[in-house]
Amino acid sequence: MAVPKKRTSKSKSRSRKAKWKQKAYNAYIKCVSLGKSVISGKSKSFIYIQQQTEKNL
Image 1 (cartoon, rainbow, N blue to C red):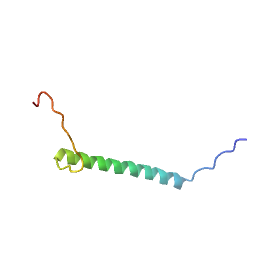
Image 2 (tube, helix red, strand yellow):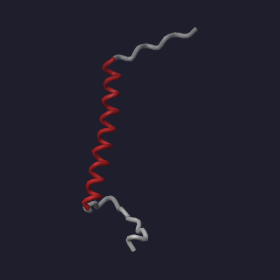
Image 3 (cartoon, rainbow, N blue to C red):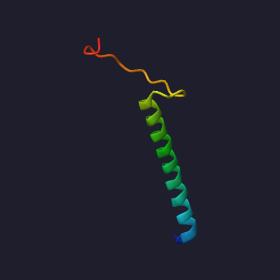
Image 4 (cartoon, rainbow, N blue to C red):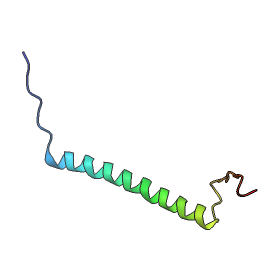
């Protein structure tokens, strides 16, 4: 016979949601920082190779 599952407490579900959002925010900060360093040309840990087109040659 099927038995309903116990309900997850609000604090536990909110804690999981907050952790998920924090993880996404940290990834966003890292991406923005990397983008800024690539644009400014100060990137040391990321190698960015620009493809040459016929107009640039």
